[in-house]
Length: 325
Image (cartoon, rainbow, N blue to C red; front, side, top):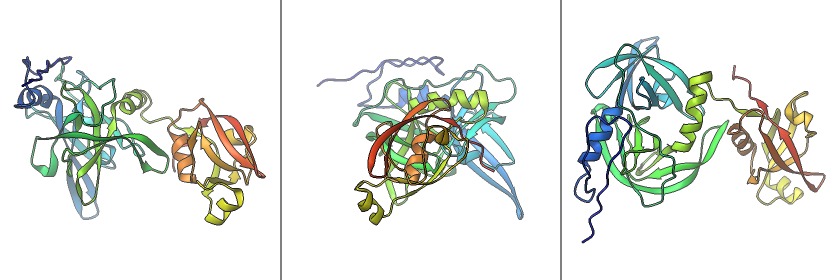
């Protein structure tokens, strides 16, 4: 019988972890990873009093930087973070993004250096074994095991951002697990647990590490995610219009172009039908917003469109999306 022994290496593990056999137990892995997983507690003032809530998070820097889900801390009046040693820390929001459901916190006070987890640099494979850690249902620190059930899942958490890179897992992710890490057998963070499909206990999703690696520096430096902006309004083509324009997969029909916007500067017009952005199909206005929203201001994108029945491409240098009122 072949026994797989996995050596664990962490930037600053809570303790030295020996080579272990995952076929027998994940305990050595959990003992190494769990010290960096935290409980996020919140309080929100309402007209009827204070409401309390909780979620999960994990340390990504020895200086007390914590990654969690934005919906855990959104609109709260106070928040604390309980680390694995039982200490309750005051914390502040460094940056957050509701569209991507990502937030970065910083622990206050003198507790550094903290144990922290490394973000995986390589994407997972379908079938890889994983652990989901967090604090679901108010039960306290909890670990569930599963596999990567799928990769490159296309989800839209918000009309301004969508991604076709979500990780799907059958490791149980319940209420309160949001913000916790999904780790591989080496203890590297493959993604941050973020959502489930209602009624499907074994279908959970995680924002992949390569997205986290891109977003965290923006949140820590700017407090927000800088999004690309075209400066036009569009709607999904009706079936009749799709047939008229001979685009069976649909498209985004432009009905307004803001004067002086990047779209205006590039020559986009009302009644143009946008069918692709950088080769990715656009089936609706929501698709267009999402595909542009994951680009940074200043990036050049190639827009494929139909104009008066003729297919053409236009290069657009994106601006920065204004903040929502």
